[in-house]
Length: 185
Image (cartoon, rainbow, N blue to C red; front, top):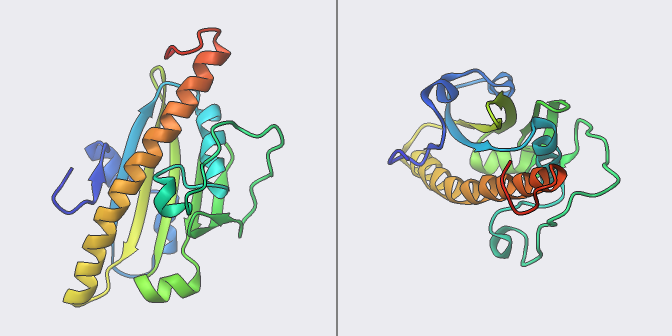
């Protein structure tokens, strides 16, 4: 991890790639990139990413008011729609099975600067890569620079936990579907 808190688990190619969230940033911005390999089919991992509309899957005692993020996928999946809540974001674009992209609503954007996020799945040997790109507006001045640094460090801690939780749940489900509960496929 860099000293800026902007990267965790992402390869250089993943760090420098273009993502759907890029189109929602008008001015100068920086990128935070987080990624994890998941030994599960992309379509299964995507179902877990969709669950971020319901719960954070990170440190629940901090960002879910002590409630527990569900550890089972629901039988009835609510279809994705633009405008739905997606953590602190609103869904702006999506491609089922591939990515969900959200933008920060107006009020928090005024406070923290505009932000856009993409959760993207890329097929990989033995599963997929779950890559998250977060674009953050670069407001001028030392106060805003410090605010971005603090947000980046907080985000990397929370998102690392989130991605590892989604990985664990998807791999557990993939192992159960393959007939080998408790094993990674």
